[in-house]
Image (tube, rainbow, N blue to C red; front, side, top):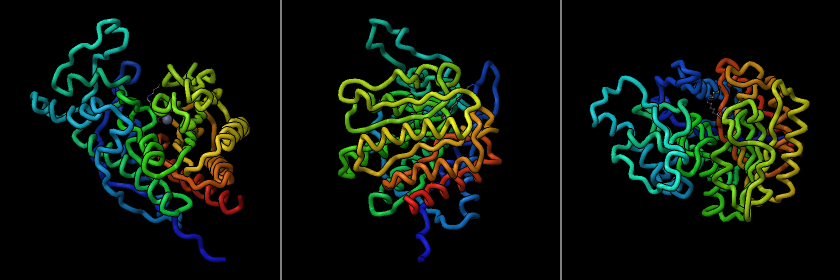
Length: 361
Ligand code: OKP
Ligand code: ZN
């Protein structure tokens, strides 16, 4: 038997400057769970495990981002920090909006004018107080997209599997809205690229982060060519609260192509594997011709500081095997996971299982 080729791990150091982050949680200011150490730990663990090769992403520019997000959102991400500095901010603390423009604010009054300074518009494009911006945020968000697109390219060019170590994550970012530590929806941008430029007709996305990917769901809600399946903590008790219920199934051409699997607290591998197998059946029934796009989160881990599910490190190998056994080529993109001491081992377990599943399946 010949040695399998190393799996490409796309990563960029640009994320290191998306740092010094704080978030507002239940009225308190705390250090942001979404830290640079997360990605550093994954990178180290994969290098230590062997069989992985770190690669720098290619730069794809804003065009593939604008295929998914409104220019109004991109403008805010790109200019909020520099406009705040130009207006006299000293740059010593992250930018977090304090005023949110809900649909209920405008009622019938749309369109309302917005301030021309991007930092003053931020609250019209953000849904929570957990998504701080600093000097390095915009470049990090762009690099995370480049990481995702580079991984998608690698698989289209023939690799069975590529991993994009995206940071910041992306699945909470919607067409014109950031939040949940996310600015640009890396996975959605990769999926849309597979459709438009990769020459594929049907893309399936599997989201196994602890949280519902509200952004990804919104982006493909009415799309007949993209299936979105998500396993996550029941929004009846967990962030983002306003989406991810099983009753949400898409609309129009996308009717039935959004599939949500809300999970109870303390779900361990047994319950998780049942939901996963239903989701994988939905993927198989959709019959995608494109590589599978996986939004991967390790906040389902038993000791995750913001999750309440009960998966263990070895379970990620099982989950990886189940997904790998499906057969299609796979683009795996990192979303959440906040137990920094375990996140590396969890990544090694998941990707190792995925490789085994492919070889066995
Ligand atoms: C991003 B990803 C709940 C606070 C939630 C934001 C969580 C963002 C998760 N008490 N804060 O999906 O891992
Ligand atoms: Zn999450």
